[in-house]
Amino acid sequence: MNRKSERYDILIFGNYTKDTIISASGTRHVDGGGFNYGAHAAVALGLRVAAVTQLAKEDFHVVRNLERAGVDVYAKATATSTRLKLEYPTSNVDDRILTSTAFAGSYSLDQFAGLEAQAILINGSVREEVPLEVVRGLSARDAFLVADVQGFVRVIAPDGQWVNEEWPEMEQVLSMLDVLKTDAVEAAFLTGETDIQKAARALAEFGPKEIVLTHRNGILVYAEGRFHEASFYPKELVGRSGRGDTCIASYMAKRLTLPAGEAIIWSAAVTSLKMEAEGPYMGDEAAVRSLIDSRYRA
Image 1: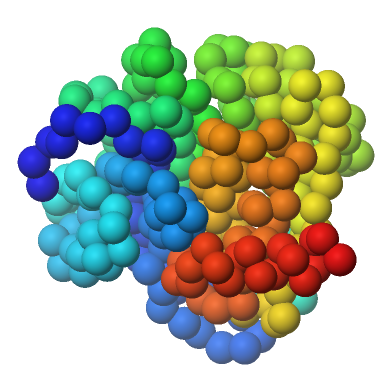
Image 2: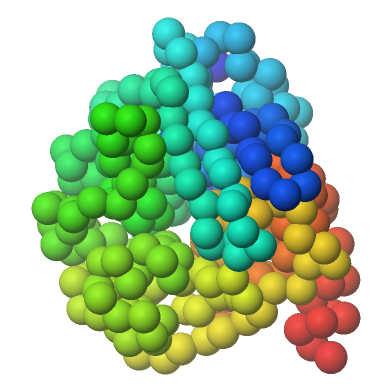
């Protein structure tokens, strides 16, 4: 679509992933990608959202779905979409094996020309997606720069598995961020700390003003020297994939106007509702508010 002149509330980018999810409940095929989960969550909360992505022409139904939801999508057609297999061998939703058979490619700064936003959310899947020069270029803009650590610690091994590897550019990237999203496993990998509060503090020392950390039971936020926590309350756990992507996008959607202690509640509520079904959150703000009133304000 053509570039628009208005400034967005949030710009989210990352490759679409064509997901095959394997668990005890069976095998499912789902449209994934952090940008996809995140954009749906942010637009459901009433924000003006832009999404930048890369995917094969055969998968452009994802673009159309986002546009119908109210998201402005700037998509680059690539030879192939990123294809991903997610295996959950146990009942622990944080225990999963990721394997890729195709990769849609990396981003360049020119893909963001003319796009401005209050917050820019880097939501890549693997390190190859977002080069350091892209992060550096985006950090120079008048915007909150937010990143999910998964897109920097994960690499594609020779056998196709997505594995966490030492991140040589960690100090450089973290020094440019306003908000960092991580999960408990990634935080422990980067800091050596299994205590999530200690891990969050350690990551903040590299520069991010806020740390948003997900774990199997909820969210921890470290902001302005204080910790905030909120639990997840899904009626049933069906859609684990996209949990963190939904969390950080909905957190930033509310953090633009609310303090961290309030934004985390909205984030936990949206993420809880998202986990009740496969795919992105497709509900509205009223449903989120109802869950907040019943479970977080009671």
